[in-house]
Image 1 (cartoon, rainbow, N blue to C red):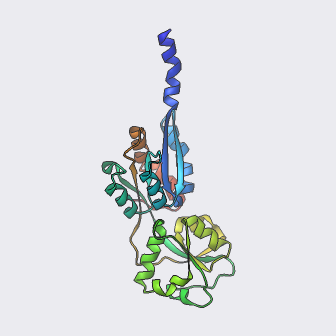
Image 2 (image 1 turned 90 degrees about the vertical axis):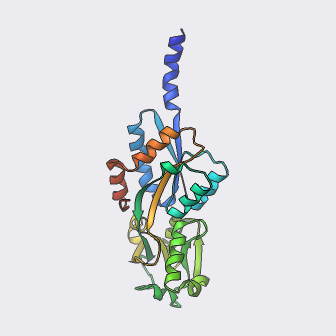
Image 3 (image 1 turned 45 degrees about the vertical axis):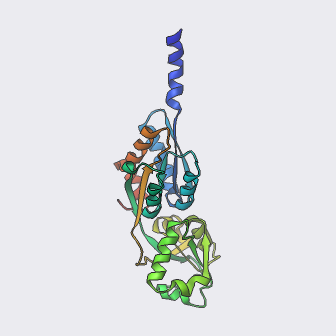
Length: 244
């Protein structure tokens, strides 16, 4: 009877292997496709995703949110996670790269050619991610500061909660320009037009690590490792991400 009971419990025990991955909003589409591939590679395991700005995700983890894996859109946020002892430093890996781009509405845009054109009177609003919590916003601030435009353009800036919100503003024509990742701009098709890839910012690199308080560290590490497999890298490349 005892053996029979254990046999009945075994499938339940396996199916209880679930991890939560908190990941940057720009990875939404790629990770939704990577998730089932990972589950197929780990029979009985399930993965749930929590998408938001990297800085917001870090705050959630710091406040005790039940998270097993953290994937950030920049190194600075992951550095803070390490400094706060929220992730296991040895588990940290870089798994993708991206590019920051300036975009305008696909139809009826101001016809921008350079960063300096953002100072035109016709450009009334420029959407960016909040520099305090959105890595794309920090990359944007670095770019505009490098070009001596941050102070000039600051009155025009509309700060969004994440890059997808910036894209929505630009795609709907609510702003004349915005700074997003190339991967996001590609997803929006002809709703937005890529103007240029600006210089003057840190490389856009994505790190991932196991959260220190994870009760599923082994499975979490499997997910981190899976992101570097050919299967996951092909999906990331499909959505425009570069290799680490």
